[in-house]
Every structure is written in C-alpha cells, then in structure tokens.
Image (tube, rainbow, N blue to C red; front, side, top):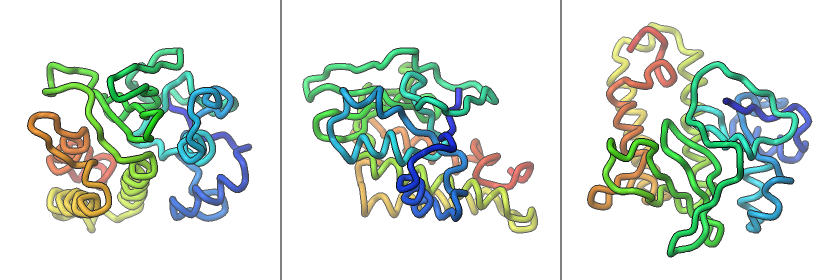
Length: 223
C-alpha cells in the first residue's frame, strides 16, 4: 500500500516540506508520506527523528512507510504492489541497540536506530545480496535528502519533452553519478561498500544507470 500525507497536516510542517521539495502553495506535499505521531510517541524519543517521520514526511517514490505507522486520515492507494511490512510496529534488538522498522525502498527494509538515529537496511531477498543488516545513512535527514533528489528528478522527467531524451542512458548515468558524488561529500555512508555489505543505494543507482527505473527518472518510452 502507498500512504499519502493527508490534507490536514500541520501548516508549519507543510511549509518546511514545501521548502525542501521546492513546491509552492502546498504542491510540495503531493506524493509525500508520514507516520502517526500517536503511534511513534512512545517509541521515538529523538525530536528531530519524530518530526521527520510524523510531521514532515518523505517523498513517496521510491519510499514506502510501514503500514502500521501510517497517520490517521492518510489516503490509501493500491496502485502497485509493495513490500509487505506487516500490521504491527516492529523493532529488533541488535548488539548496537534497538532498531525500529519504519519503511522500505525497492525491497529493502529500513530501520531507524533508536539510540543514535542512524538508518539501517536489510534486503528482503537475502539470497540476492551478501550480508545482512547494514548502515545506509548517518541520520534521517540524509535519507530524506536523497529521496527528495529522486522525487524532484521524477517530477522533472515527467515534465521534460521527449526530444530532451535522445540519449537517455547517458543522462541517467550523469544523474546517478552526480548524486553519488554529492553524498560522497555529505554522507559517505549512503554509498559505502564495505567488503560485500554494499548499501542498498549501490544496487539501486546501479539499476538506474542500467535503465531499470527509466519510467520514473527518464521519459516514459525512451528507455
């Protein structure tokens, strides 16, 4: 299921999200998801993390919020299949601390470390990827920033004329390389490759370069 932010979200949160998304008059909220503050209040005690999950939200593509955390009043759309995250709030205990399952990206489960705020991921199909739980972002703001970049690129691709995509694979490669270069400076964890424990983004952006997600980040029908 996909969860869109409801129309009654806090005005201040809307303004912040609009600024992040480059939208005006609330347009930046289209395609965003957010968690229920009521559900998370007794779980997430870091104010910035709680605000990001419950008030500001995340771009919908390619992110999915765990169904149990969806805010009351969110519109539910069953337009395409997604990873089933279950119906209950789920947490796991690791040697490093307790982690909250809060979402997924293209078959990778996302966990928030409730102690230090780092973001971790584990692939749904372990036989396809070596290793298990691995850190993928230094904090939620880093994850939101990357998702914002993907969201804006999808909107840009939707609006570009087909003539701009005479070399779609080259353009997708430039797009992927640019984001990876940016995160190498701001959050090297996002694209880290520690032995065989690659970040989900290493695989995701490799697929972008190969055109797998061309329908979202390039003109439809051009890849």
